[in-house]
Amino acid sequence: MTPLVLASVTGAAILHAGWNAVLRGGSDRLWSMTLMMVAVSVVTGTAALVLPWPNAASWPYVIASGLIHTGYNLSLVRTYRIGDLGQTYPISRGSSPVLVALGAMLFAHEAVTLVSALGIALVSGGIVSLALQGRTVRAEVLPAALTTGALIGAYTVVDGIGVRLSGDSVAYANAMFLLWSLTMPPIFFGLRGRPPTYTRRETTMALAGGVVSILAYGIVIWAMQFGAMGVVSALRETSVVYAALIGRIFLRERLTVQRIASCLAIAAGAACLAA
Image (cartoon, rainbow, N blue to C red; front, side, top):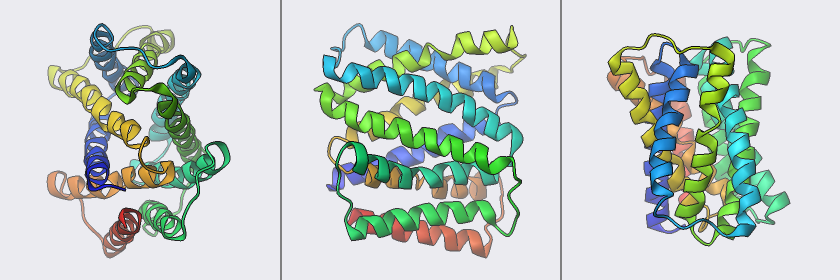
């Protein structure tokens, strides 16, 4: 993996931690997600006026990814509703790199080196250990979090294959984001009927989070042209480390010995992947 791709995916991980912090901070997460998608639709709809469309061969993947992303949105909101965020987020994110590596082997015939496999295992294991922290995971939480992780793995593999057929990673990402973003408002109003009362600050933060999410995952789509999907996915999920640092610095959350050890395991895994 080149230094540019490595630095870009690391930056995407930081951006990903940021927009998830916005989502977790909203008083109504389904509405926050919908507002994010409104921002995404405005940005990508405008960009579609000047950008080319991706190659026809990639369109089945654009459509599939948009639909899987919609399922991911709903699963994520449900998971956050029934489980503690400190557990559900790491389980969802930590399970996905292994699934991406397996999916890439099966559907894109990507080989995984021993060092890469070790790196993926360290990153995933370190992330999941953050969720445990000496606590018991409730029976209903684990299936929900793993479902979210499976959807993350599915859309990542679909996009990894699709972008390589697209001829233009920016055009592919824009088309996928546009399709995805158009699904959430009808779903929200079908479920709720009307939006909740949000402060101007909450609305602004959610809209900004949507713009950040384009950059965060758009970089990942671009990077999957050049690097193995499992490696890129695992590096992306180091966002959990940055989320822990954000929690410590801005939310005054305590960094326990186990949390520090987990972060070190993730960092070691990232070093293996960058080698």
